[in-house]
Length: 421
Ligand SMILES: C[C@H](O)[C@H](O)[C@@H](O)C(=O)CO
Ligand SMILES: [Mn+2]
Image (cartoon, rainbow, N blue to C red; front, side, top):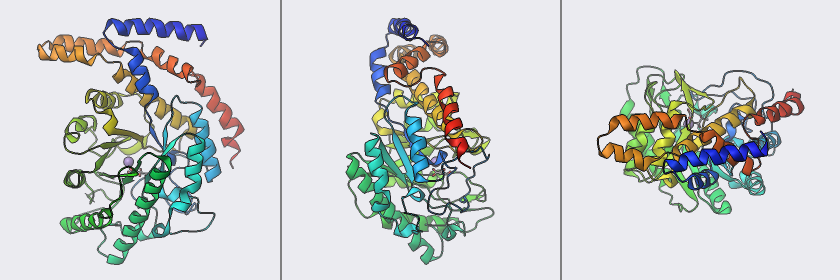
C-alpha cells in the first residue's frame, strides 16, 4: 500500500470511530504498548536443546513435517528475530526449560541453572524483548509413568520438585536481570488413560509437592508463578491430576496467578467467559491463547469469535494490566515463521478491535434495557474499519503493512529455512 493511502484510510477510519465517541489515539497507544508473550516452541515443534533426538511426550503432539524447523539456538534466535521484523511492537519470548544453552552437553532437568539461560537473557536485552519461562515436565524418562510431581514414587517426585525449584530460580534471575517480573508457568502432564482409582491421592501429592517448592519465597518483582490446568491429553484421557478445579482452588487458596489455555477445556467451553470470574479471586491471569480444533490441537491462532471474545473481556474488565497474553500453539504443517506472524498479528487485531469498542455507549444501552440497540451496534462494529488503524500502526512502527509480510516470509523460506536439510 502507498504511504498516502495508508494515512488517508487511517484518517477516514479515525473520523468514524470518533463519531462513536472512541479515542483512537488512546487505543493505538495501548496496542503499541501491549507485549504479547511469544512461545519459543512453535519454531522447532517443541523439541528444545536438551535431547534433540528425543520424543515429544506428555500427551501433546505436533503434526506435519513442513521443512525448515530450527535445529539450534542460533537458528531459533534468527527465526525469532525475523518474526520481530514482521510484527508491530515490543514483545516477550516465552522459553521452556528444555531450550537452555547447554553447550552440547546433557544437563538433566534437576540440574539446570540460570547460567544455562544467560545467552538468552543477553540476546533478549540486545533485541529489546523480555523473557518468560516454563518448567518442562514432559519429554523425559522420569515422566514415563505418566506422573511427575504427583507420582507415588518419592524419588520421582523429588526429581521433579528439584526441577521446579531450579526453574523458579532461573525465572527469578531472568526477572532480576531484565528488571521486569518473569512469568513462570507450571504445567504438568500428570494423568492416566483409564479408570484411575487413586484420584485424590495423586492430587494430594501434587498439592504437597507444589506447597513444598513454592514455600521458597521469591519476590514478585522478579518472579510470578502461575499454574495451568488441563482437561485431558493423549494418553491421559480419563484423568488429569491438574484439572481446572484443582488449580482454580490452588490459585485462589495461594493468591497466585492462574493460567487459562484456550485448548484445555471441553470442546464447546471457552475461556473468554472465565476471565471476569477469575479476576475477582486471583491476583493475575496468564493466558495461553491457542486454537483447539475438536481437541487441544494447538492450531495457529486466527481472528475468530473466541479470540475476539477473549480480547473484549480483557478490555471490558478494565484490568488489562492484570492479564498476561501468551501464545501456545505448534503447527508443523506450514511455514513456522508464518505461523508465528499470523498468530501474533491476529491476537493484536483482536485486541485492537476490543480497544476501539465504544464500551460506555454499549453499557448505557444495557442499563436502559435497550438490547436491540446493543446488538445492532455490536454487529455494526464488526464492519468498522479497524484494519485501517492496524495498517497505520504497522506503517508507523516500520513493519510490513497488510499482506506485505507474506512475501517477506516467502523470501526467508527460500533463502534460509528451506536450506535446513
Ligand atoms: C508446550 C505445552 O503446550 C505447554 O507448555 C503447555 O502450556 C500446554 O498447554 C500443554 O498442553
Ligand atoms: Mn498451554
